[in-house]
Length: 93
Image 1 (cartoon, helix red, strand yellow):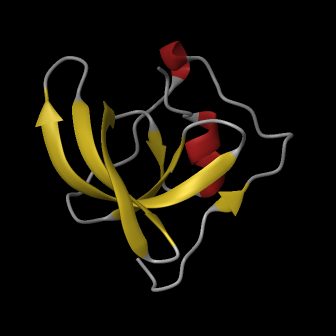
Image 2 (tube, one colour):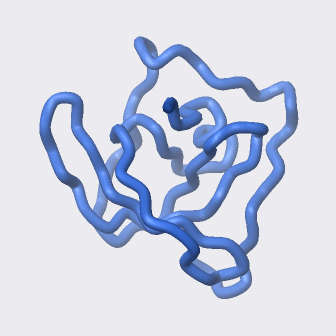
Image 3 (cartoon, rainbow, N blue to C red):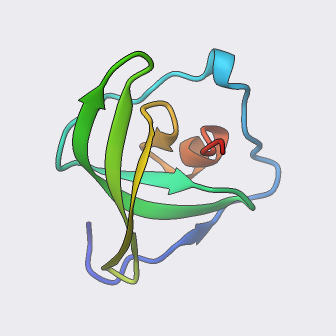
């Protein structure tokens, strides 16, 4: 993750898609992704662990301004390689 990277506001024309048609991105521990928890705001994050199971779970560290400010366990299809993909794959609660 580049130092100083901030949250990104994604255009409101991009919308979450149903979980039944989502596809998980290629998963690599230590790689950078984006995650969205709603309101079309994408946070940079790093994949910490692939937990597995059915459906597959992952653990990420969420960042803002280059600093870690939270860890989350999510389904593997709730992150994206781009901010737009993260919004389409918005985390479900």
